[in-house]
Length: 256
Image (cartoon, rainbow, N blue to C red; front, side, top):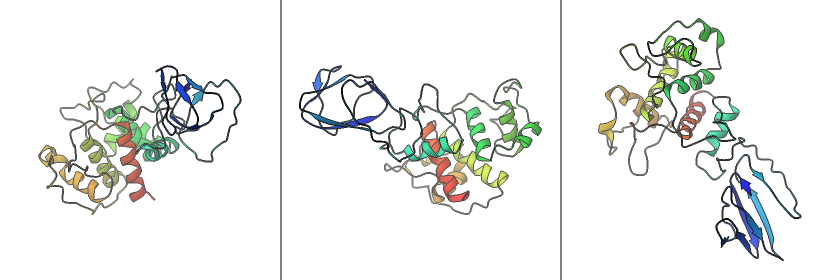
């Protein structure tokens, strides 16, 4: 049985006992399933995730890779977001969701996004402790209160209006872009001159007026890309993988 992402190559017969069918050489194994390697069969399992756990009966040898990867069972080296997850984890921006999982396709809320930007700033504790900005829906005893205050104090986020911050609201793709734009200009003092014409995107009408300039910058600056279908998907909630990817792209372009 294995937990994590792994593939198997073999010369003979391998059976997925859990599912009751043979496994072709080169296939990816299914986490939680039990496998039986037939007699006179040589099999090699390649771990694709940064962390995997396996119970093995019989003789085997182990070869350690030099590749450094974040210790999560649900992120494979073949995933498009693998490098971004490594960047976010090893850079201390944000970690997993418990039980060895990164949950790359789960969404991120606004409170967590403020902590991520705080870490991106280098975790300036004096600024955070000195921040006095308050919102009626952010109780001071909440773990994220000081991070939200820091973000507001530094001009990174102004909240969602009417004195509210909406900390538990899922952050959208265009909100992430605007937050990064504010972080760069208001906090880092970076002049963002790159722009791209996004008016031809099929869902341009969904881009809010308050985010159009930032979205144009994000595409022009390589922070985010237009999809192969010509979409920006500005109103869709941003997954943890997408946030990690945008943070990595932003850092590589502006913080090196």
